[in-house]
Length: 192
Length: 119
Image (cartoon, rainbow over all chains, first blue to last red):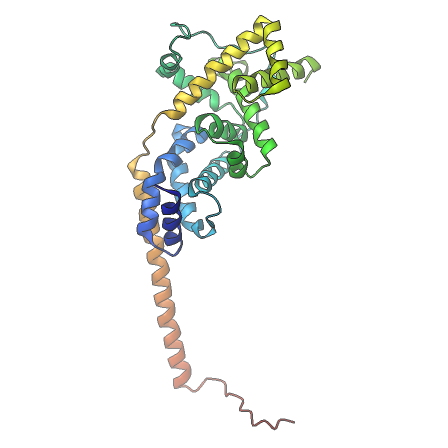
């Protein structure tokens, strides 16, 4: 799906063409679900994704085509997930760092980091640790290190200056390591 | 937060930025010195590198969205488009009836004719 095709479909969808909207949904459904899963957690990802698409249909006329459709879609997805997480306590992991966090070396050493990274237990720990990171920092971390976006794109999606986006990624990264060093259980093994 | 706690957090963030390859020049050299100085800093840098690999591996995995999401979204859009059209259609009929009613009972306010000679 190219940038131009997306723009064309979005323009048609904004004038009420449901077929065009349907193509956008099918082409980008994985992106929305993936990001929702990482920011909201697997349990809430489906509801959040459905809410994202309802918002997209309702507001597609506000997409002006100044940036890629996917950037706009990231923005709607992140905003939907963050507003769902509004009441979540804003944990400042820095309050809990009494010593430097370390990850144990994988049993096979670092020779094959990908194999070590992908085992089911580790995956569960990563997902759990992510949930301990403050939602806005988590969103920035996911966009940077899991979606591979640039700081300029992250800043545009989160609607903050570049420096803030950089700071949120940095804090999210550190908080994630603290939680992960505790086997994904967050500070002091609890969820305070 | 204590001064030591604050410093610890700063070390944590700067080694993280280094491990992510986001530092250059003098900033990178300063963090390299930190890492060389202390074994726990070295272990921290290794932990970051390991975590970043895990995040990127997980990020590169393909994720399939449940079919139900797209079906729901498209159904909702069809429904809302239908409602919009029905609203326009009924609104149009209503307006036509109203116009006919106004015309039939002569309720239209009389147009003020201008003869160009108003005082």
